[in-house]
Length: 339
Ligand code: PHE
Image (cartoon, rainbow, N blue to C red):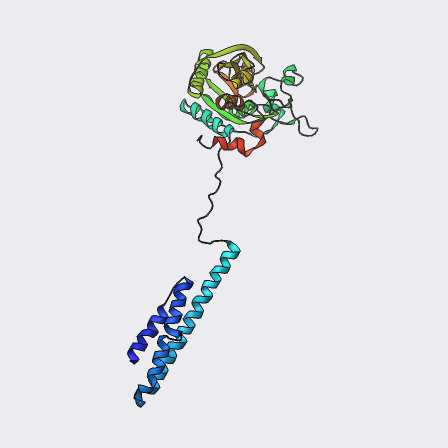
């Protein structure tokens, strides 16, 4: 009998449940008015005298063990209930995090970098706050040169030598000062112009400018490079090089791409012509090479600069450049599937 009770004590100590119903069944089994303890106590009178002491001890131990177990499990269940009240159901699966996406400007900029990397261009970067030399003078735009007006500049306070770069050509000047030809580099980055903000232009935008300097570089090389780029970027390479003027290149041209007029956005972006100007280009002016320590009698080069926003607008059919800077989540979320 004593052995049976000892086995019950082990069972009681090991008992575990997380439902109230099972706990109640357990309580009734041992402590109920018709429970096992009642039976064992009733047995007491039949136990031989010499065993009474030990018998008494084990049923008491069984009783306290059962009571303690019930209390402990009850407390645990109550705590869990309380936690549910405060934190909700703590076993519920977590809420999915809203995963961000790359900005369309970054997506297009990275694509452009990839395309030019394939043909050997490296990436160079420079400061957004520039000095006059790197943004203007070295680029064949001496003080009082009328073409400075083309680039409505933001100056920092009243110091005319400190300004927000108006193009990343400034990075190319820095690159030429520090590297010898052959040079093949692209300079992606943010630029600033004090222009009226409209659906087609903004005072902050992004450029990818390219520079190629070596022996015998010709305009034909420039054109081929641009054709390769437009084919890779847009899957088509109908471009137009319109004669133009930049102080740092001679001859110079604007790069237009023929996009067509399939959608209403195409009409809006191309002003109804199907053509969109995506940048400027030309053969690097000998004066610029000289200013940067390169001998124009030995080396020639071409340069180009393209607006990232323009290209992103075409590719993603975005009718208003301002959307890039408003950070409207509904707009940005649409680029989740791209890279
Ligand atoms: N820097 C010019 C601009 O920002 C673009 C350009 C770059 C033109 C290189 C010609 C050659 O408008």
